[in-house]
Image 1 (cartoon, chains in turn orange, green):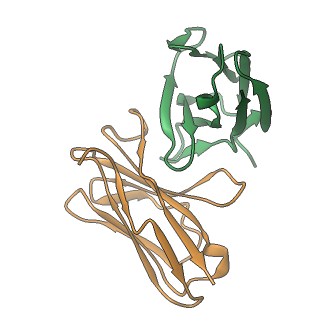
Image 2: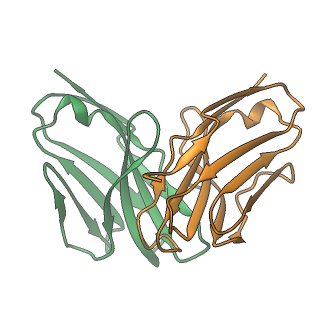
Length: 115
Length: 111
């Protein structure tokens, strides 16, 4: 596709439910990042994929958060038993080279609201 | 602990003014420093800086890196209302794979 695509664009869920966020990176981009952005805060790193493997998961806030990437392409971020503090915009980015050696291209994000 | 500190946090200027946005960082060993512009949703890439003292320029925007003093600046000349956005400074360090984002400078250009 022309750019990074994320779905859904908005998600409202009840506390305690599981949610799945999807990211479709630019074709040919080997590196994929997940970040989240809370109101008034900077972008917080969650996880980095190189191909299908995740050499850096250090930003995942708890074991309720997990992510996978299949076929070196689509990635899903799953949040189990959502809490109100999980409310944020979840941004996905991809890049041609890994290790941030080429610019990241961001999707428009998924706005998650946990009620 | 913030690795990337941006200043000012917010700025209001009139169309036509020149602005300078600042970014200071702590690590001395890093791969690159990047600037992004975030309007409503997706941040968009502006510059990638790897060498000290070499200015990068794109239209009315320019940026430079000072590795000795550990800072970078982003200049915007002859500002326009379309320049209104949050400008993000990003450090690509050698530790880990995360790119560390500053909290951003919110720029508002008034007509």
